[in-house]
Length: 228
Image (cartoon, rainbow, N blue to C red; front, top):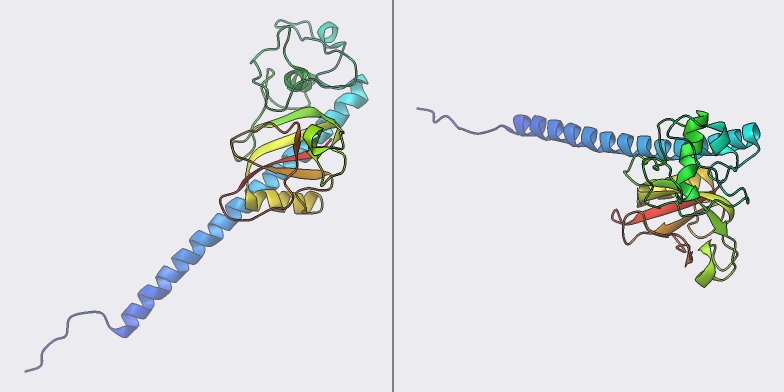
């Protein structure tokens, strides 16, 4: 009398392993596709906001947020608040912006209010938008100082940014590296795109030197800034 063996044959085990491999491969491929979509989204933020900024300048001959004629142009309540008109956008990219501009609102917040009233970007009010990684998108003016102790994202001992810059925070290392590489030179401390290794979400970028080099550890998070 033959004893019937209970268990899987080698063929059955091989089939199961192949299925598991295909599933894992699909998951990894899906994750990479999601990452690539986020990279493209972040790059679209930079190009879209840059286009909106220059479009506003062409139309009104003023910088959004700093526009001295905004209050007279948009009077429907809540009326717009005019900027100082001195060519500098006051405030920082990560200011705690109110939903509606009021007297004393930083110009870096009114930047968004003016662009939205003009129809260049979607939404209402003065609060900053967020990127695809839930990081803050914002603008501020660089100081152009040469010393790291006084520079805004100083570049490897050279001068910091001059003029208006846009920053996008909370970017995983893989995303930040890809964005910098595709928009600039892939170097964290040089060029028109510079990065700061974050210790906390949406960090200040003034009076600090840019991070010298990117390190892809799967845990590093960066804020990247680009001159507009």
